[in-house]
Structures are given as structure tokens and as C-alpha cells.
Image (cartoon, rainbow, N blue to C red; front, side, top):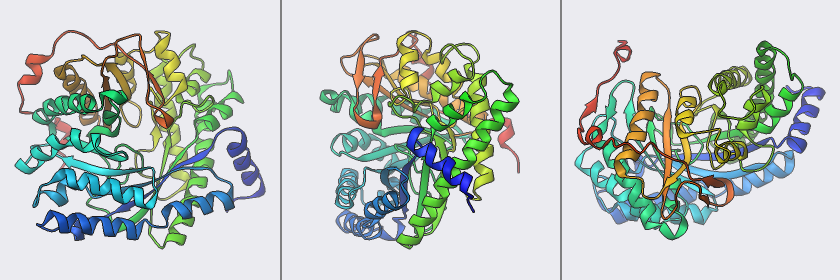
Length: 450
């Protein structure tokens, strides 16, 4: 139960520190929609999504109005489409069906145009991967993800090589919109099944028929709390973040359980992720700078981010028995005002971001690079990030956009929550021969735990 002090603290967080529920995501299983006739299968999918998610947006608006807690996005995640479509092909029709169903119920995004090929891809999965650029270019709110590595399996370098080309084709097909299709595509290591955040959300095979997952965000709340302990020890910093994360998570659980009750759908998890936005006062980079760094990207940034990520998880876990998803700190460049400023003034490089991903919740997120970046370099960036995830037994991801016609020094505006990205420089030395080897990078020795 929340006492009066807790309630007043939460009100202050909402009114002055930009605390919000970043997303309510309905996860829907599509296994009972499978048919060897693609027309029947897609119709089944459309009918199930529109039936189970028809009141999601309305319910979110009602909760927002009654409780005074902003709910920014309402989203849907579905069973990875590669698992339900291989018997009938026609993959683009599945993407269009997802887009149509999501628009019919009024959500912001739908995730799950996804595949798993951490060891190898079947013939059907290879065709599915090839369909991703067109699927994302011909739909508006469909998101895709591909898991190419796990700690247990190692890294499928054939899939990594393939994804460099997939990303390039996706941007080429949407060149008139700054390569927008690639903003909806994530390449994963150790993808989680209950992530409510886009673009990497999907409804995992271990999930039930339908579930409500909630993603909470509050970088501004953490930043404001740390202002109260300025100059104090890291013990005080960690304690303050944990206490703040506890309050944020309690708010998320309240909304999640209320949505679950009203929709008649089981409550899944609360994902406590400090997901920033381009708004001033809603930046993870500014939290790190509040710890004493002149700029995000300075030496010490990785240590500061490690403390932040750990303290957020500890505080969140104490507040809910069902903390899940990614839960920690996100560092998407285009979606974080502080990250954008750090890149523009030369304090934050792609190499430093890669080091930071060793200790944060996701990986290289919303990175814009020159449009003429070779496929092999994109694949090599993915390979490096997958290695971090595999060796450290954590989820890592890459969402990178080679923006057509843009060079280092330019800026690209993706709009809305996707924000504005300065074009970042890549190491120009070629990894072509490395990527061309193909095969599989073996799992690390500590994967053998049986």
C-alpha cells in the first residue's frame, strides 16, 4: 500500500519530473492462427488481434485520466511471424495484416515481424529475412527483430552478414524518409520474450495466450533525485537511485494491474527501463552528468552507467515480484537530448557507446551513420555487439540506420519519439574478409553449465 508521502512523491514525479508509463503492450499468441493457406492464416491473425486488443487504447486513456499518470504509447506484440508463416510463405502479406490490424485498434506500433536464427536459418527463415526490407518499407507501424546470437549457441555469422544487407536495403527503400524502415528493425543477442518496448518487442513462445506488459520510464525523476545528493559518495548515489526506482516501479505495477483487471487479461511484467526522449529533462545522459561528468562520453561514463543500471534493477525488483523485459537504462542516441549534445560536441563516439553497452540494458540503439557505409561494416558492428551479449550473458541489440545521402556532420530528423540524430563516424578500415568467413562463432565456455 502507498502512504500519503508516497502518493505526494509520485504526484511530484509526474507533474515536474516527467515520470510516465512509456507503454502498455498487449502480447498475443498467434499459434492457434496457423494454416497452410496464407489467406486463412492472415485472416485468423487479423481477427484475433482486433478481438483481443480492441479495448487497449480506450482502457489506457481511461486509466490515464482517472489516475493522472501519463501513458505515452499503447502497443501490441505478437508471436514471431517467422514461426507461424513458414508453412505458407507470402511473408509480406503477414506484415500488411499486422499493420492493418494494429491501425484498426489504434495502437502506436506492433512488434513481432521477427525470426530466430542464432545457430542457423531454415530455408523458410532465410526467405523471411530477405522479406524484412520490403515488409518494413510497405508498412507504417510494423516492427521487426532478428535474434542472431545467444550465449548458449554462439553467434550465427551467416545471419550477421545477411543482416548488414537487410539494413542497407531497408534504408534504400525508404530513402525519401531518411531510411525510416531501419528505425523499426533490431538485431538481438539473447532476446527476451516479454519486452514491451519497440522496436524489439515480440510475444515469446513461453508466454500465454494473451498478457499485459508495462514499460515505465523516468530519467527525469532519477536526475532530480540525484540533484539532492550532489557531491555525496557513490553509496548515497546508489541508495538514492534504488529508492527512486522503487517508486517508479510501484507506479508501473499499479497501472499494469489496473489494465489487466479492466481488460480481463493476465498481468505479465513491469519493465523498468529508463527510456529517454528528446525532451529536455528526460535524458539518461544528463543523469550520468549529474554524477559528476562534464559530458556523457567522458572517461568514467561506463562506470557511472554501470552503477545506474544496477541500482535501477535493485530498486525495481524490490517493488514488484514481476519485473521483467529489459529493465535498466537505455542509451538510444537520437532519442536522448543529452546523448545528441554529447555526440555533436565530440564527447561521445561510436566506440565509447559500444563500451557503455557492456553495462547497460540494450546496446547500440538509434545510431545514425553515413548512408554509404558498406554492408560489411554494418555487419561487423552487429558482430561486435553480439559478442558483448554472448560473452556477458546479457541482452544486447543493434538498431543502426545508414541514412541515404547523409555524411558525418549532418543531422537527420526521424520525428516524434525517434528524435534527431547526428550522423556518427564509423571506423573506415574494412572488415570485409572477416565477415565473408561466415559460419558460427562458438559459444563461450561458460555456456556449458549443465
